[in-house]
Length: 324
Image (tube, rainbow, N blue to C red; front, side, top):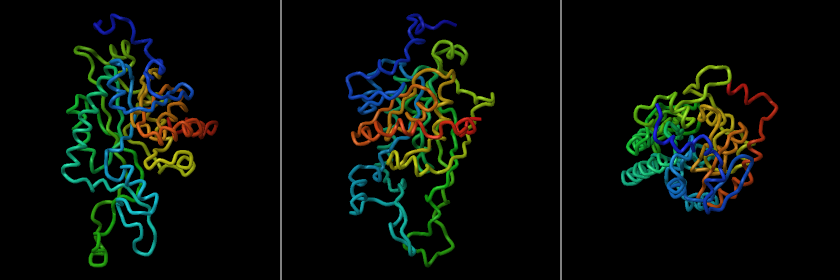
């Protein structure tokens, strides 16, 4: 079936990241591009159907990630913490407390992702996939908002990773109820898998021919991409290269970017780039990626971190082992 959108014959050649830089401050790294911009604005301004996939980890607008809170904690002047910095005789690291959101803030998060889904739909090609990190407290609300915004829900990817979230005794009642935990210890991270709907009457094969999208790339051994990935916490070496509060490990992200382009061609975008770990993963897999970040400090961090992150583990066989 031939679709009207193919008549111009432009989609097969629209894969140059420089065509999407617009008038923003940018930095080229390998095949990829870093852009200092607000992702809502950039996604809405680029030509329709410019992107083949999106892989991202949003900040969710929670109080813990507000820059004033980060600055307070960095200076030792408080800020919002998930657990006390000192408790039961030793010091603990602060972690995001997603349950700190009140109903008004949760509604704001929902509205944020409904509107973000709409601009993502504009930017993605039909059949383009979107991988988005979430957490057990907000995933249901975020995923419903993305569907309300027009994306198709295609499933959930489970990243198994043990964190310090959950498992605590009731706050201020630790001694009275020593055998109780207020919630389970977190052992996984949910990622939503979404897709921009295919054009009416279009099959996946048609979409692959016309837009190079519609499905997910199989593993090098021919087995399908799976929705369960074992993943340790981000190694210290990577955190030293990119000091971001929620950086994801390279060996995990490289599997996602590999799967996101079913034919191994096209442009992936990370609209919430942070320190550039998704861009680095794409570079390591010899794929094109555009990272967009509105905070200049993180943009500047990414300009320095992407290349060294992308070079990690080369020649070790680790990448091939993880993909197979």
